[in-house]
Image 1 (tube, rainbow, N blue to C red):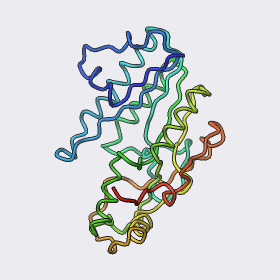
Image 2: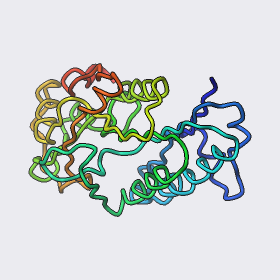
Image 3: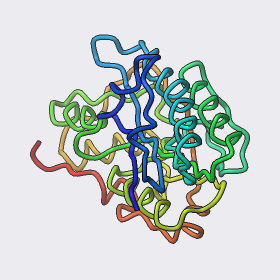
Image 4: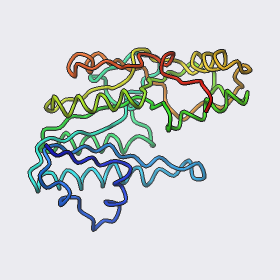
Length: 246
């Protein structure tokens, strides 16, 4: 079985409006859209490319799958769509998009309205080596860890290796027309996460900062654990965060 992965490395191939990924799909049984285009630090509020990846990239890939007969489509999405403060949420909870995440709602709609056998994996806030979460470790080591607002907002985290394991499960089991939240076992507040980092690394107490633009989201992984036969290796941030030397 051949699998085509539409990832950050393949974004450039579909950015032009004239580009079409169909030839790369020939002979594939599964297509995976795992791509994002997170803004660089010099333009932190420019999410236009990411919106195009979600909207145009998804439409192009779905059309190509239909054209060449790829039956199974796996879409990475974001559990952040289930932002309802400190309330627990799951796959049945109505989405609560922001201006920044509205394109993810559009992306999911394109998938669910398609004729393909789809599976959507709403990933939590990524952490692990090579992710943007590394900056919090750097802040803590430098004694400049920032606590957004009152620190009461929740994050539902997922280590990048556990997200990858869930994708592998989805490819193997091919659940049809199913939505799963891929998060770890214990949502954490910014206050508790910052305190853990500060105490573990031995840095000063976190400094006050404006509230984060990331909405509070507290998400259950029960469906993914049951239906995908998946368990996060890093059950919580306590085991997953590597506080060793950078």
